[in-house]
Length: 166
Image (cartoon, rainbow, N blue to C red):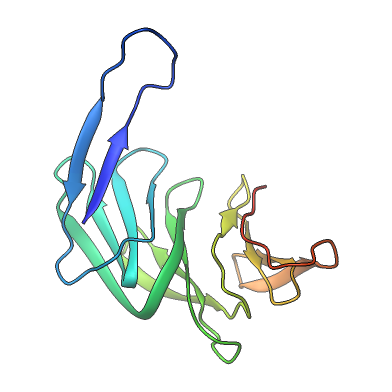
């Protein structure tokens, strides 16, 4: 179950909770992350071994994707058409970063093997690139079109990268 609270962002003497509700995903445990798409129609939730997508208005489950290991982060693309997620794995795994097509609700063939525990992934503002931590305490910038490395940023950190922003 994922609980979502949206609170007012302004300061003042009086404030109310503007929204509180919960999604239910059968057989899902321990939610890791949640994201809402840009036009506020879908909620995506990351669980131990599953990605779930719910309708914002009805909270109905519209898609569930078993992935076999903990889902660590989940991010809608800026246009809301794709959903990227990272899952735990090993250096031998070639699919620790995967993408779901929201229009068809299908797992795409776009995958990448991050040799790291990818706690956070991040889309570029135009949605053409995806930043993911790598095993060299750096970041790989992937072209979403083919999931190939556009460039690698290494050597600036002495520990693994745990947060990323464009």
